[in-house]
Image (cartoon, rainbow, N blue to C red):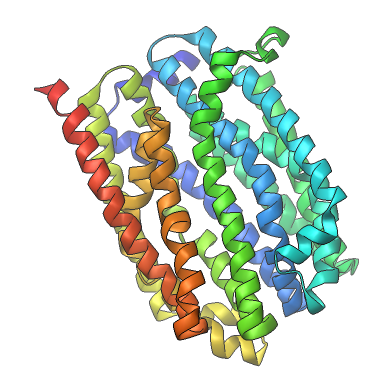
Amino acid sequence: MATTSSQDLGTKPISKLIIKQALPASIGILVMSLNILVDTIFVGNWIGSTAIAAINVVLPVSFFIAALGMAIGIGGSSIISRALGADQRQKALKTLGNQITLTLLLTLTMVTIGLLFADAIISSFGGKGDIFEPAKIYYEIVLYGVPVLALCMMANTVIRAEGKPKFAMYAMMIPSVSNLLMDYIFIYILDFGMAGAAWATTLSYVFCFLFILWFYGSDRSELKLSFSHLGLNVPIVREITSLGFVTLARQAVVSITYLFMNNILFDLGGETSVTSYAIAGRMLMFAMFPVLGVTQGFLPIAGFNYGAQNYHRVRETLNIAIKYAAILASIVFIILMLFPEQITRMFTSDADVLRQAPNDMRWVFAATPIIAWQLIGAAYFQAIGKARPALLLTLSRQGFFFIPLILILPQFYGEFGVWISFPISDVLATIVTAYFLNREVKKNLIPKDV
């Protein structure tokens, strides 16, 4: 039964497969994003708008460490998808074992460093003035749970690579729902403030981890590990890290972006501008859930069929995924252009933020309809195991375009220069990705089919 599930990726109609893979992924991302969104609403209304800015300071640090697990997960899942497609089950098992070992070694090391240099890190990421103290409270508690979160993020991608998208969805939903329940108890009822928000987040990771342990201990998974699979294998580690480095580099650039944005906006507009960016950032995580769901659903299908040398199915998967993602991105764009004021009011009643945030949000999402080409295009190279182009295209938007723009444009246009950097970088990155993707398809997919 389990074997049939992964083999479906190479036989079932592509449209149905993408929906089957993307729908649970989208729901999982939606619930996770709703968690972040509602968590921010709770914090803003029950603690204060400065608390929103404080969490925005901490997130890039904690998410970067947790992204080690996601990077290892996605890098290893690409190997697992292709190994299952090529009927190399032992390689798939060894890869999963190595993913677990690498995740634990790296995240525990990073958390230790993060706790030793807490004050300096918080200040560097924009935790200044009134933001510092609540940021430090949140930071220290959340960091204890980050290795557990990293394991959950790693395992989630592997569950999807097995062709079990519903269980991957459940793994994403459990911490989200539990976090909101504990937010209500710790913040609203017990009045623990920032510490309550942090403990709610940390404990939610534990619930997710317990579910994943159950999944791999049951007969739902076709990957049954033994201790021998945990020993590091140099060729597998090299392949995991080369492919996973794409995801890690992306998250590193995201963290660097937060560092620059929080500091630049604090200097230009103080706590109000940092809070405005925090709200736009939460909406960016939330509103893009259907597009990210299609991207996540696309990865195992493309990887499996590439490993099985079904190149016509890879091409079809690519085309359908871009079409679905573009339609969904356009819907997101319309909603956010029409209702930014109403969205901002959900987070805060602060008059200064209410005046500024809606217009900022419109600029952040101005190029959303075209973003599908960039996301799917970069993910394609990762799915087929081509780490270098995947890395370069993944970094193109924020690393090559956005960060230079936010350093240059504010010198001429002030804070407005920061906000117009969003659509400009989206357009430039999409053009570059479309060029390389089109060249790759013509060179390596079409000739093998004719």
